[in-house]
Image (cartoon, one colour):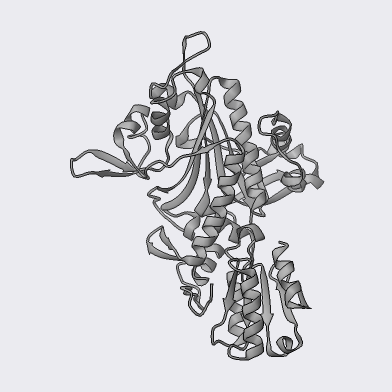
Length: 436
């Protein structure tokens, strides 16, 4: 992407309505534009970051054995009446009528719909277990949307739904998603801590929310230091094997938000192992047994021929929320600091003197070698503007091409996260960016 041609409406001033770092920086970096309260258009830079996050989520769901489908955003009220949630859900649900006066709704979640879909085809215990997921836009009419994409009304969400023959199988599915979530967030450069949570309107009796640490987090959290030091990605995972030891490690050490904090249990944690911080929820998993399958008449024949009501769980990740959460966890006074796996582009090639033959040639050569994972700042702007915009947009690498260096066959390579700079050959610059 050439910045001289890019649709990248960056802002020098912080909009007055932006209260948290991610909202300020996403607006200033030209990632999003608010169209109404809690609803945002994703502009090219933001869309690329969102797709990077979405793809990591998808890959880990696939690896854990979930199968992707796509369900509609608009659902019939009849489905929700079967489960008993239509009247109970509250004003967050956007209720609408079509031209035939049929009651419909813009889906805030999909337990009812996926159960109805699965019920139409699952007849025998041989059809289990299954885990179906989709990545789809949701709408919840928050009474006070705020913090940009962190708490909007329309948002992109991954929700998965497991179907198992019995309690033991349902617990196995829960553990698979538990581990998949740990890996998903770790691949994004985040340290996510699972904490026991209330089930809320989803229901059930077992639930964990995944919290990442950030100074601007919405919740106070308390946790055992061992949970911060464990490397989730240090070993491969066999999702068909016994995942109990992994889950046991994470659930046997203290971790709680302020809502669930237990002072007596906290006092038993050695003082040197206690960590208090702020946190942001980025994922939530639930086991709720037969709450929906029983209400909606989902039965299969068991091995003995008798009808069995499958046990279910649901597993959500706020994909669009994650983009904001990553920025909350990784920024400085100059702008965003993207972790490599989720950066919209790996590098910005800064041509400090467009029109100068040596600068143009070197910048074009580096840009071509790194495409499509690089932007080329070929704008007729001062060097200071280019440096500030590159820091604001947070690309992990900056390859700086100036007249003096270009004449000598050298460029300056800057690592955004550390500020480290090195004078290297163009070939070395390309190799270092590619290696990450």
